[in-house]
Amino acid sequence: MNLKDCFDRGLLKKGKPDLDNALRSLRISEDFLEKAKKNVRIECYDVSVMLSYTSMFHAARAVLFKDGIKERSHACVPVYLKSNYPEFRKLAETLDSYREFRHGIVYRASNVSESDADEAINSAEDFLRKIRKIIR
Image 1 (tube, rainbow, N blue to C red):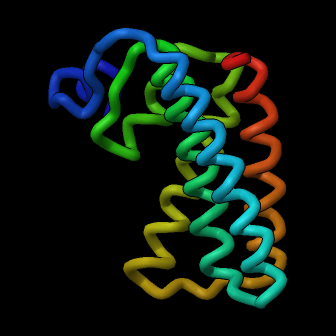
Image 2 (image 1 turned 90 degrees about the vertical axis):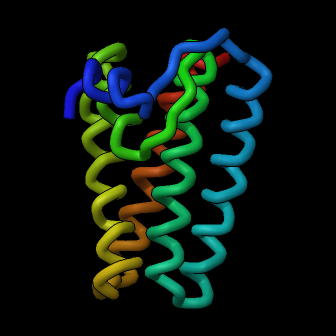
């Protein structure tokens, strides 16, 4: 799917830039990241990966809110980032790979190790740090 498809299908919609929602999305991202860390401590590695993805997703949504874009599809968020922020191409690819990993956990009961969870948390921390720079 490309950016045009996302808009044509109504999965992304143009609106007004909304810095308040962007900042709220960053706070939500931070909260999910903390919950991901707590779940590693209690050995809920699958939950930790899902929460790490959710943290990245909300950080990415902050960019969309800042740009006045509303999303209706998790798959279109990395497409938007790649198209409008080429410097974040790698971040967008990371987001998309964790979107697919999360899907595997939820629908195929994929096995998740402690190292998978640690890596997801590290990715989410990096993602959030880089996204903060363009929001603030």
